[in-house]
Structure formats: structure tokens, C-alpha cells
Length: 281
Image (cartoon, rainbow, N blue to C red):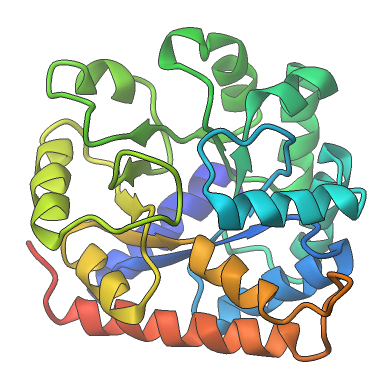
């Protein structure tokens, strides 16, 4: 199954069910690669519909304290972009259907080689890319090889992206649109339900792609609110905080980390089901 098919098929199936998606985020290699693999393998059964896998980077400008710390743990564990792709390949041995989106920054891709990266990512089973610091105006050198490999380039839209700029930002976008529901870094606060409703409605006027709502979503109730208007809720900082609570004094995973984190994902997934009953048209 190709990247376009995996992402589109998942959203189409969820639309037929009448519910939104839960998108979960973890940093690759946090606190080690084996734990990361166990988590991502367990997330679909726990209720994750799509998975964002963070690529650790030394200067994560858009990330709040929780995800910065998770990225540092990943780097400390020796996680490289090549090892992230190896993790995806291992995941694909047992799951051919769940979409995997890599989220990170452009420097590691440049260091790896953009065309080589896109070829290797497609072969590994990566479905989409969210590159936080890559402006639309400079995206062509990534967009073309990504498209050639069947990888969707997913764009971020902020509350400050006005109606005049929206068509430009969304030109050539694929997979889904990621609505950053607050101005600021990840995991610090949540947008009001009224603000989410307003911005999702105006983004819908500019695209037919699914819209995922992220930044600041931490509870099943906030998940439910996000999917009343959007097509997906993205949860990152709350998950990595749950993981961090299950580390020992040396930063190593306690035996209960995977089980407890997946239980937390199950609780978040209950919000997707609750929100389905009140989804906006």
C-alpha cells in the first residue's frame, strides 16, 4: 500500500464510521529505540489511527519543554535519522496499514541528502512528512522527491495564517492539514473550542483535505472537542509526559512504561468516540 493510499484510506474509513482520528506522537529513541518500537507497535491496538514519529534534533524551535526533553533523550540514546527509518521498517513488518508520519526539522534531512532520504523513507514505509521549519516558498527541493516516492508533504496552518495566504500555503499539500491551534510552542496551553471551530471552518473553505487539530491537547475531553470540528486530534506532549513519569532516576524505561503509556492512549481514544456523537457537519 502506498503512502497516499494509507493516509487517504484511513481517513476515508473513519469518515465512513462517522468519527475523527486520534494521531499520537512519540519521539523516536525516547528513551531507547527498543521502547519506541514497542510503543508504536502497540499504539494502533490502543486506539491510535495515525502515528507521528518525531525525529530528534538539537534545536527544536517549535517544541515545548516536554517534547524537547524527549528529543534529548532520543539523541542521548544514539538515535539518528537512519535509525528512525530502521524503526519504521521494523514497524512495517507487523503493520502494513497504519500511516506513519515523520515530524521534525530540515537540517537532518539535508545532512542525510534530501533525494536519498526520500528514497529510503519511501522504502521504509513512511507515509508523510511534517517539516516544522521549512517555509512553503523553499519547499520545492523536498516536495518533488517526496512526491516521486509517494510521500505526502503535510503543511502546518497557524491561527495567524490569514485567508489571503491560505491558498498559497495549501497549494500542493497532501495527506492532511495540520492546524496548529495556538500561537506558540507545543504542550503549553490549549485553544478554546470556539477558536478551533472558527479556524477549522475557514480552512475547510480552502481545502478538501482532512484537518488535524494539534498543540495543547492533553485529555479525552479536549480530544472530543477537537474532533467535533476537525477530522483528527493530535496528542504529543501529554504522551511524552506520561512516558517521562515512567523513567527511573537514570532516565531508563521502567518495566511498566509501555503498558502505562498505551493505557493512556486508550483513554485518549475514548475521547474520539465521545466526540463522534457531536461531530459538526
